[in-house]
Length: 137
View 1 (cartoon, helix red, strand yellow):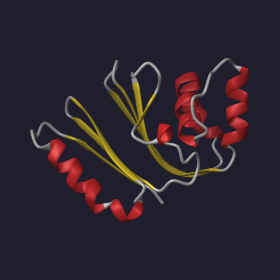
View 2 (cartoon, helix red, strand yellow):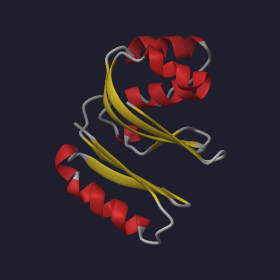
View 3 (cartoon, rainbow, N blue to C red):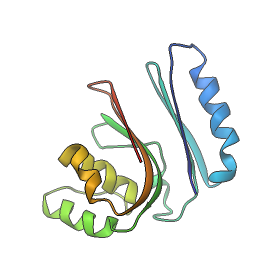
């Protein structure tokens, strides 16, 4: 199971601290580790690759515009069906990951998209433009 972490702080050491936290989570996701920093926000992810093993699906994952960033842990059982619906609405995907389905669904439909998810999850989505952070599980 992947590991996710986040820090919102005015502390100058958030880069160091998020890397330290992610290192402690490395047993949860030994396949890839990365962090994302923006202003006073730090997000971290340790990946256990199960769906779309390609590096294009690494997290933190960003939409094509670079405005949205997601870290996600869990399993969405119906992501393939949701992806088909999103494709019909004109969304183009670059991965086979459930992460991209979640992010694109949120961008298109907002918070109401989460009611369509079947599975278990913890999700953090950051929007740069509005400087907002969404957490859901």
